[in-house]
Length: 81
Image (cartoon, rainbow, N blue to C red):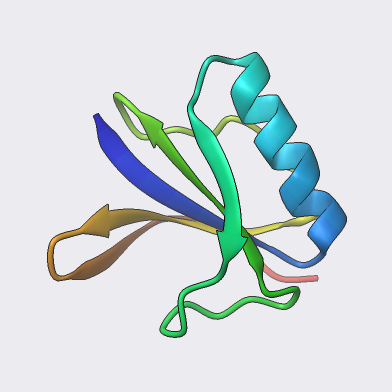
């Protein structure tokens, strides 16, 4: 399993994404955004999946990164709000 972090433009977007992850069978947790990842709202969702996931793409999603041993690898990024 791979671990990912999704960041959002609003807290509502993070909560909605977490619920959507859980409906699709991904283990997901709300948490503060790590300092070295940018975020507009300060809340992110950390989740696990077997392959590159895009559980829900909406206007609230800022980016998805894969958690690596030495940092993060960008998997998805929006064009911005």
